[in-house]
Length: 250
Image 1 (cartoon, rainbow, N blue to C red):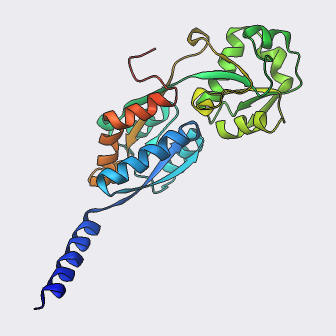
Image 2 (image 1 turned 135 degrees about the vertical axis):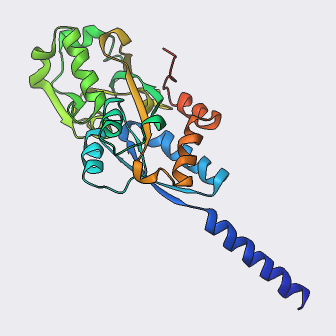
Image 3 (image 1 turned 90 degrees about the vertical axis):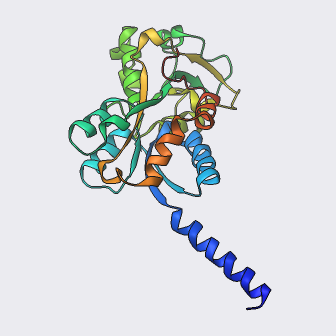
């Protein structure tokens, strides 16, 4: 066998082995975690060769889809209740569940000096306030809870415009369809424009975002590898960069 042919044969064999060990996994990702998830998936692929195919949306919608047989191997929720329920229902691996991020709620406007603090909500000198669906999206539930804690929810209710996801709630403000809105702090990473108020944690329950492995993927090495990678230092650095707290932090 000629040496050049031998080299090509070895290279082909190595490529075949590499491809055999590389996997593709489908991951349901809460909309607020879109950008960090993309970075983490890219780093995961660079390190392991496994491809993480990401789908973004509202956690409540993903929960429903998973219970109806949607082929996701991993679920990155915007809350801890839905992953816990999936484990209780026997659809997910209970001991794989952990809090990968703790979200922060922000009241934001594209207009400089428009948002000051809670008084911006109390004076209500605006026509539309954007939130995401509180039944499907935990950040929407946190927004409603904040307004209830301040005793102004019923007053502001007629002014609310509701997006299906936190992404849509952000877009309502970004496009000027609402003067201000409740968004995730992570969505404002790298965006210093406008004005904002970081909502104090005492006004809403902590947004503990849990990840969990589906029961159907209990033996899937790529899926288990992604869960492990999400717990590791590379992923945690990305999560903090986008303004989330890690479990145990405030």
